[in-house]
Image 1 (cartoon, rainbow, N blue to C red):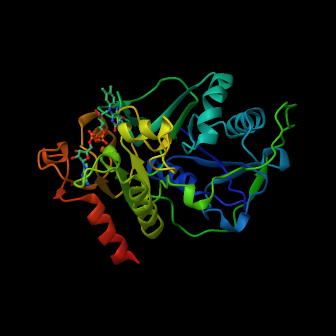
Image 2 (tube, rainbow, N blue to C red):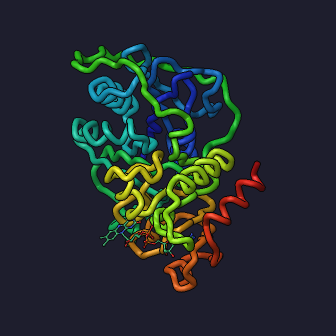
Length: 333
Ligand SMILES: Cc1cc2nc3c(=O)[nH]c(=O)nc-3n(C[C@H](O)[C@H](O)[C@H](O)COP(=O)(O)OP(=O)(O)OC[C@H]3O[C@@H](n4cnc5c(N)ncnc54)[C@H](O)[C@@H]3O)c2cc1C
């Protein structure tokens, strides 16, 4: 039986984020000896899971507050060594994804990212992972140890037990010399931040928004206002088809808040939301493959023969998306 380290970085307030709590619940479900390793400026002790049998180790201090390869790698390596764990579960955040494969190399172990499941197979831990853009699902084990596994966010229910009273053992780490200094976070304005992984709804805009409409004219400004309003009111996450994000990228400011980061599909993202609503998007396979994990799918299209009508959506509204969104915004107002 592997001993497990759940390796997490704390949030700015010293608490554990949702992805960390998801990794913790995955580890608890697997069973076995468990250690929690934390990296951050501070650890909010009262917010930690109250799991009496779990050892808690932490590397804290100002140098470890913000993501930076040298300091994160040193802290993670020290925690892995101090715990002696053979299986390390770390949330698949951008901070850890950048650092932990390098840490696995330093430890002589292996790392696997984008795990979507974890279970015991013949007594050994095995992860589920998708390949070839979510088309092939594999279950894999590894003989090498330590094995660092980064589960994707949203694949496990976050841990929800009682909190508080953890005894924290501090692991001393000399901050390595570093050429990188952390200055500040520059985040886009709230109304420009259109990618919301935790939103209940994924709203997808396709290239149809930029096409000539029944009156023979293009209504790009109208489209931008309708979509912007809808996103504000519904707090949905915004996705785009490749055709639309390419248009935006080529300087035709169709939707000023749409970038390549919003693209859904084979060459785009595969987000996880309970519901999806596609508008003015044809529903071609290379796009719909990115809807793999969207549970309930609806689409609005003028064309009754569009891709969504061919078994790709649960409900297809043959309707003018401009009219539908105008009405939706009225109802949400
Ligand atoms: C290797 C490869 C990888 C690809 N990867 C991706 C990918 O990752 N993501 C992706 O999206 N695409 C990808 N594509 C492209 C994909 O095949 C499609 O070309 C693209 O998704 C089409 O975008 P669209 O549906 O927005 O535009 P269009 O095909 O132009 O469709 C526009 C739709 O809008 C509808 N419409 C117009 N006006 C209205 C209105 N008023 N109300 C309602 N409906 C309206 C039209 O009926 C039409 O169906 C890839 C292609 C290849 C070859």
